[in-house]
Image 1 (cartoon, rainbow, N blue to C red):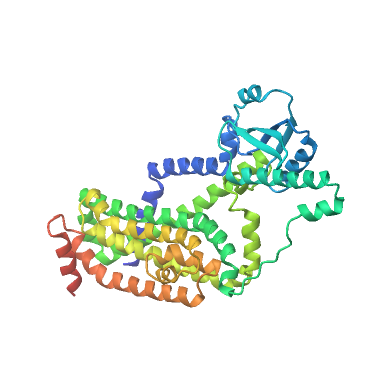
Image 2 (image 1 turned 180 degrees about the vertical axis):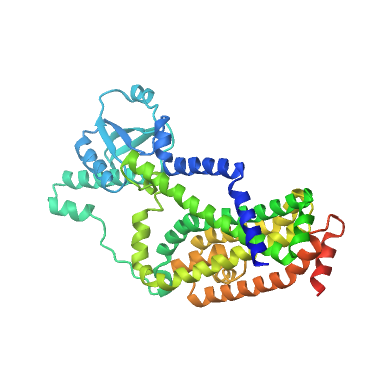
Length: 436
């Protein structure tokens, strides 16, 4: 029995990795991941620009250019981009014709007896709101500086008037102190951890369904079941599919590493967050890890997450095998697997929502629900949104679900594996689950 089980696992596993679609698909995935990791270099190669650097040409009709240039130049210290400021003696209409780049801005300064000066910001296309606010802030600072100079105030008085208020933020609610850090961390984890798990679960479910239905359609199932027990066949599919997913997950990590090596060779840096999404900065995430003492917690966080992942993948594979046994083709299985895909999708969207509503009681409860917990619980545990007790509850519920799927699912599998009729599908499943 043991030799037959090993043979079936080996045969099923080798069939998957020797498949041409697996080889071609992984080559395509490698190319896609490498391109995504180096997306800014790719866009720049085809004429795009991720730097968002601006060139501001100033038409100074009030003789305030030196003061305005000084404050506009200070924006470079606040934004991760370079702003070039140049004075132009051309007329406004003539300069407007030259505004063809998305990074060009024309700033027209006019004298105003009441408000010192007025400014008109002219651009060819839309300016990012944050950048626009920084430009306005610099102009307001220049206005104050020029006004106090005209009033013959000292440099010390100018600095007092133009400097920002020294503030200290105090939050009394301990649960709210790390809310902003939690949002950033959850956003990061939703991309790095949850998305790969979501993809692997989809692969797992579809793979089991396709293999079982292929054996049923070719009638090779009758030969296999004639030589091994249904139980051995069932668990061989589950084990082989999970081993394959483990290999696929490792390959995804390898492809990401290759993409980072390519980025290092091309740009000299592996930092991809500044060019893609400034809200997910690696340095910020690393700082958050240190603030929440994550390294000290890894000794129990990693084992708990691994147990949760193994039990979750086992549950999805058991469900996929049970549903596939009652179908005769992939069309029928695709309909039955829809609830599994929807459940998986719910977990993914809840992770995104958890970054918007940190500490929400509903999301904490959902992190314990089997099949959904694989998406929610790891991210919430790492970010400190849930305690160890909740993830232990999630693991216990998963163990209960896996036990029930093995006990009652095997009965359904026995009744359906050699069933080629599509009539009364759900009735047959419930009837088989009740039989001993």
